[in-house]
Image 1 (cartoon, rainbow, N blue to C red):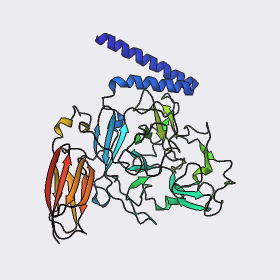
Image 2 (image 1 turned 90 degrees about the vertical axis):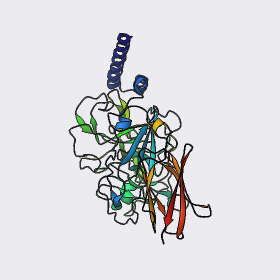
Image 3 (image 1 turned 60 degrees about the vertical axis):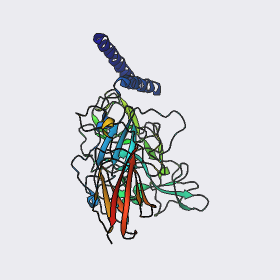
Image 4 (image 1 turned 135 degrees about the vertical axis):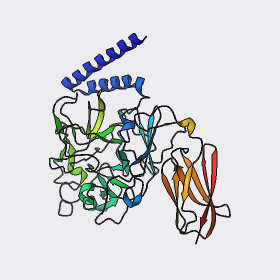
Length: 444
């Protein structure tokens, strides 16, 4: 049986190599789809193994803190045979700030991002990237698209808050770049620290001698690489900086039914000043390509951040206007980033991780301090605690005065007591039939 299995594996590898050669020679959409299907079929037998979608995250294993002493990077990575759940604070490990002309400050977002382990091309209706997170960097920080959230309103001849996929949208780099810190990121009104463009503090974007690492995953499950890749899609050729295929729109100079070109809205300040031109660069309209990478020797569709020779961001920066793959629910929208984690998962602890830990996550464990407190109480969830803990703070009358949904292991949460009267309160934590109650005292 083992001989037959080895023979079958060799046959699969030989078939795959032939497909890679054909793809490199002809570069047709048909062959790329066949190669993608072949890779998915071959990966089915090893889907339960630890892959890049599990091991590429920057995990905080030493309780390090970042901005304002908040927990930094990724707190925990859990996975099943189908999905990876990345719990993060949205606070990077590198120093951030200050932010000129930006009154916002970062806060702990307690994100739980869900990344599919079997990403697939979207062959149906295209899905546009939206405002808010469109993916997650490898340090747990949110990835935002190229738009700043304002579009030209034909009815009022002015800019309106929101986003449109057919009008004139403001370029985030041009209009918000002044508020970027030295790591080219900034917080929004919700306290979410994020990057719209290539994050230079996350990896060495000056190293053009080797293939860039995976620096994140889009919410369709496909990896995002730094700026450098192999010249050829089959993994051969010199290392080169990946070039965007977006060029200045030939019609942009007129901006029909759009904002006038002037000192306030110069050319390149609108996203629609650019148009995708096939063959103008290395990447497609999604700002990616199907190719061999160090982490995916059998090939994968991959996005690349785009910069110029001076390391400045190049439009569309990370993803194009649309995703290449199918986006899972739970990551985007009003409650995006609050995914529910299954009760039985494997907690990734490094290359030696073995066995499902779901059977050991039976209790709710946390530390609460300071207690009593006059203003804030912090809840530190234990790594051994249940997933998806729901917290409710009750007053002496039995009324819920605060609600904490989706509390996850290793993440810190806060209760704001400043507006509550002096007295005794009760915090209940519930998950999977387990319930624990803590007494909290507001001191003054």
